[in-house]
Length: 213
Image 1 (cartoon, rainbow, N blue to C red):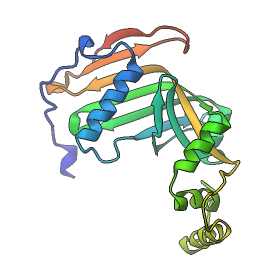
Image 2: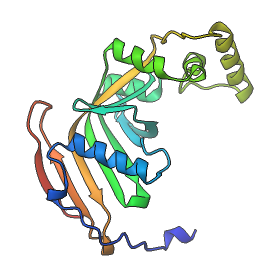
Image 3: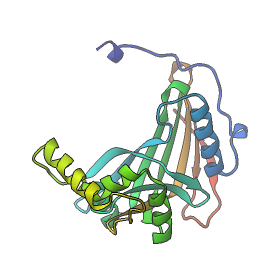
């Protein structure tokens, strides 16, 4: 495990407050475009952290499917482990790691369901087989075998052989409303740049400060 003893130099490229847009969501959108142009694999993938009603934290990778001035949009089965956690405890975290670029974005806020029309619109944009899979999988529930899972998919595919496939009422979108967004840029000697945008609620202006690495 050579990686455990390797010491990577993250470079000399600086991140100054003046480099960032005054709107952190606009700045995030620009960094996402930068990651796409750098051919980062799945640049919209991020680690979503939740806490369930017993106080147990969990994390998993999900795909961002929208970002605007309201926040960060993703979709899932409401009955999944993350869905159940969000329904009982709205605060969440998200981490986007664009490591070849020595960049991270860290998000703290709360997740809320989007309106049904937004979920419908996004579901309709998905490939047909992805729509079928939403009906086929009882996400996060145990299953005996891969063969049984594939049987469930085939049954759902037979039920919905053609477009349009209706959105299941147990599946839809969430939006993370951010209260804290941190832009992280790796630097040499572990003297990284960290610039934080923070607000107490979504109606307040952002406060900006630099953090020590």
